[in-house]
Amino acid sequence: MTTLTHQKVSEYYGKVLETKKDLKTNACCSLDKLPAYVKEPLKLIEDEIQMKFYGCGAPIPLVLDGMKVLDLGCGTGRDCFVLSYYVGEKGEVVGIDMTDEQLAIANKYLPVQMKRFGYKNPNVRFLQGYIEDLASLDLPDNYFDLVISNCVVNLSPDKESVMKEVFRVLKEGGEFFFSDVYADRRLPQWAKEDPILLGECLGGALYWKDFERLSKEVGFIDPRVYACSKIDLLDKETSDKIGFAHFNSITYRLFKLKELEDACEDFGQVAEYTGTIEASPHHFVLDNHHVFEKDKPMLVCSNTASMLEDTRLKKHFKVKGDTSVHYGLFTGCGEVPVENKEQGCC
Ligand SMILES: C[S@@+](CC[C@H](N)C(=O)[O-])C[C@H]1O[C@@H](n2cnc3c(N)ncnc32)[C@H](O)[C@@H]1O
Image 1 (cartoon, rainbow, N blue to C red):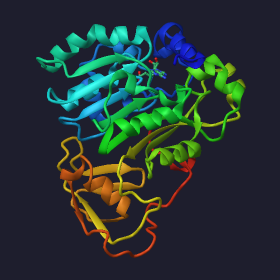
Image 2: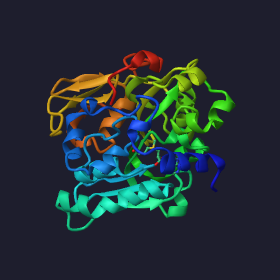
Image 3: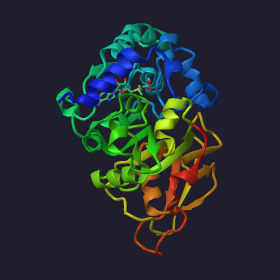
């Protein structure tokens, strides 16, 4: 199962990089761009974990209390500990990574982090393994409410298996909310094999449209862009090699919902945010097309209605109407190339 790509990537994260300062792009989000509710628990997280954080976004969605969450390619565990803080002692967080050195740090600080959060029983565990084969770690079907990942899927030599595994382990109504690097075109084979480009999350980046096609093929019918920001190639050698392509860090949210359609359809449904999410009392951002203001009714397509009423978001929305009368195509969620959708870093 271990491939040459796995070996190169593991070597890069386990041995080549010492801290995030060694990275050759600005994909790693700076602290000031993070949402306040992510910054808060970071104050309680060990410096060594944070210095070895190599993510490219903030895939920490709202509404986490009591949830079961899986983090693919958890590294030294920064996001797992943020999730641990928000899911609470009754929730569960599982972090998976293939690299010994990364997991050793995550496990070293597990007891101290649990103590700081005031938990008697740990709600996080770290497992060593490959994200392409979650079955070999005994992760069951339809188990997790949420799967997250931060700058990892691009590194996988078999992205289709990763996506199929995520779909398998998510419950109906569950969500894959994750940040990764995408290219504005299909990259040549040599770029995929270059160990530095690969390790820097550039060589293995998918053309974003191919990623959306793959998502739909495995069952995530309506991928939504939550945030998108341009990545700058800071290092001249890297830019000379791959500067013909443009890269974005994108946070997608993909819901596992049976009823979604392949286009946005209008059934006259209306959704209203109740303002009951503590970290977001005035509005709720579903994606970069949908910002719901508290108590303001908004016309939505049937897919958006389902994302709000058939998921963990349900208790924070009033959705009126059903799909019994059809009014044609819904134009409010029109497709736009991701390059034109830039919206904040994280
Ligand atoms: C860019 S780092 C991101 C780490 C972590 N998510 C963070 O934000 O700090 C990529 C991580 O994914 C792990 N990884 C890459 N490919 C993997 C695979 N196929 N299976 C399991 N882990 C993988 C690496 O070992 C590394 O720790």
